Image 1 (cartoon, helix red, strand yellow):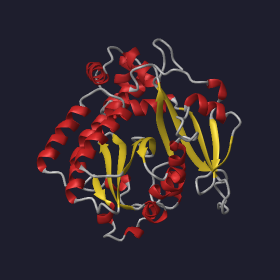
Image 2 (cartoon, rainbow, N blue to C red):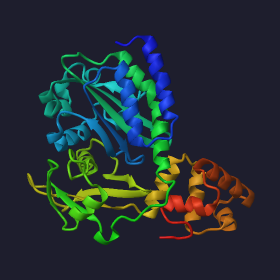
Image 3 (tube, rainbow, N blue to C red):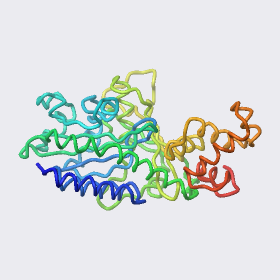
Image 4 (cartoon, rainbow, N blue to C red):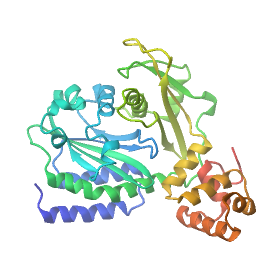
Length: 364
């Protein structure tokens, strides 16, 4: 176990990392390097999440079971044991698997169905959430030869959760600075079908070109983004009563461009046959309203400021907004100044351009 001096130094280094304006991937990799100096772990999975639905997107991971990725994701979503949505409601945002199951690891579907085959003896889980939403969750895995994570390990992760949630939110806010660049709109949305084991069974003819254009895989990555499996796994979790959040997620691609993923049953009125390809996942460009909601949460807008932003997006002027919000025009101007300060924009046109993903002076 790392001594108190090493942990104090690690806390300082985390503070330095979160103060830098880096993207979410680089932030997570830098934080993992710091964590490795004070917590022993053998593998990790760190996902961003849609702040409203909490569904996982954009993973950074180093795990030994990539061939079983769909099974791993399904099992992760299928249990409330240290689920990020459960940790978010508890006193501590971090916990260990061994503590949660009282040492009986087979009580965890994720361990019983996948992790046991890879010699994993414990998992330390942390959720990163604030008053504006859930921004990600982290699982650190430890081999059974190393023993369990300690209470000090969980405590260190819990203490780091709040500043890291804020940092991840700021990373998402920075994706809105540049206007969205169009990416092959001629190809239309992607539609994929999966069975209940999250195996891809079919996709639309345009999906290969769309995915290659939008999500070109690295040489060692799958052609199907992990977000597809996450929204499908969330759909199954809702069906099983594990969680109530919708099977929907928004993920940033590049250049201010956001995607929306949804999962549903192909025949919602009929029970799925064993092995049938009944889950449908669609991927398309996020709508203006879907972007505005993310924009407001990422920049930490108050309820009043978010309401004003919505009216601004409809083309309302100061007088109209004051009337609709039952406020004075002076108060409306004060709210606008606060929005400008939080978003770094200097006028209404710039705020709308960033929130809606349009070029200055244009409207989709």
